[in-house]
Amino acid sequence: IRLQLFAYYAILIIKLYYIKDKQMITILCEKSDAGSNFATALGGYQGQLNGEDYQIVCASGHLYEMKSLEDMVDSDLVSQYTSWEVEHLPFDRSRIRWGTKLKPPKKISDTYTRDHGQIFSTIKQALDQSDSCIIATDDDPSGEGDTIAWEILLHANFRGQIYRCYFEDESAKSIHKA
Image (cartoon, rainbow, N blue to C red; front, top):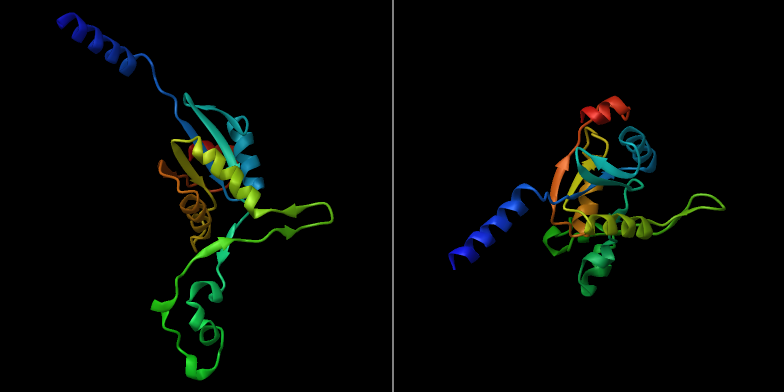
């Protein structure tokens, strides 16, 4: 039994000290041009940084919008809550089930439609492979960049470690510093 315990602890020590588990880090950018700047600074959309694997994914601004009021109240309240008649105001906020939904696809040009569902699916797939996420959205005074990232992380049900990257601009120097 002592020999078995010794072998067990020896294997455990080897695993702890000599076999380093690599984590996948997802860097979540607010838009594609920011992702491109990060990829340029770090050497690609995928790679290694400080010995850990990373991948860069990009949102396209806000992927979510508020649900319509009709979708957030009981069916018997829809006519009251979609009317702006004085007798129905103010609304009882406790009867509203606040929520968001993916924005519908948006036609950008004759050849390109921004599909928010596809963008979210790509980001979620990356997050599902990751142990941690670095929020690398704009540091807006209004918190808009943080809102974009947190909406995505909440809808993706991401349960890994979350870090926030602050940078002055999207230059390689600022990105490396952050």
